Length: 104
Image (cartoon, rainbow, N blue to C red; front, side, top):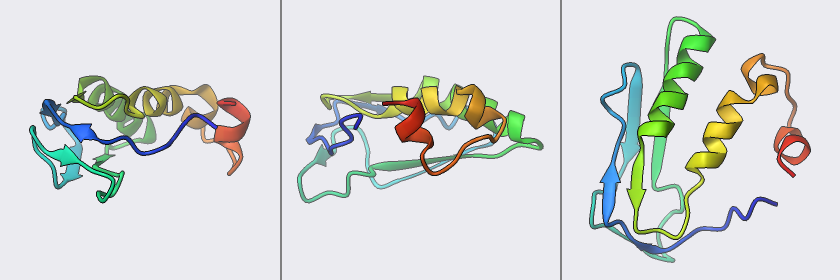
């Protein structure tokens, strides 16, 4: 299902989208960090907020579009962007089977 396995490598580019209003990034990495098999695969957590759900989702989409992660074979940024802009997610019409049903 979506190949969500961790990826190892050295971050040769890493820029957090902190220029987007209403964004917080929690991470313990910097450009040049080595992501090894002993590292938590969640290398960064992106949080957004706004006065409304729509504003928060818009900020999340902009932040995901602005994230720069280089040196790893893949990330889940594009998947997360697709998830955050999916019509069912945007209107709050989803269940715990959302990913399985909508992203087979």
